[in-house]
Length: 120
Image 1 (cartoon, helix red, strand yellow):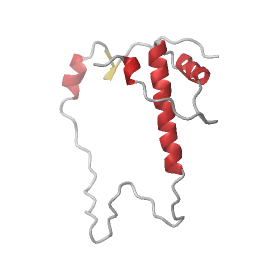
Image 2 (cartoon, rainbow, N blue to C red):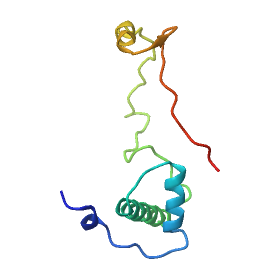
Image 3 (cartoon, rainbow, N blue to C red):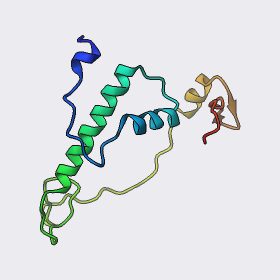
Image 4 (cartoon, rainbow, N blue to C red):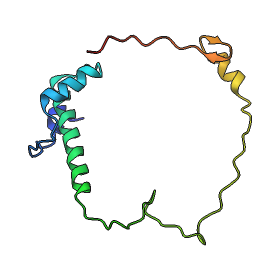
């Protein structure tokens, strides 16, 4: 595997909406992440590249009457498959799953509290 510094993408063009090192460090602190300087720079550049792609996509001129789709294949009423009936089926493995949990209370799995610090 190549060292992280070799995998760094080229620095994106500077724009008003780029994530600066200061803003990125603030986000890292809010998320309580521990990153090396190389990891921080790599992730900051990746985020800036993703933001640039989003800006590029937003700049594509589309007709205002273009219908919204959840995928690239439009289905007409004639070709659309019928919806299957929605019905609940009881799970027969709940007891086996609960038996594996380290702590259960009233059939709920008890998880430890997540330690956290106060945010500014």
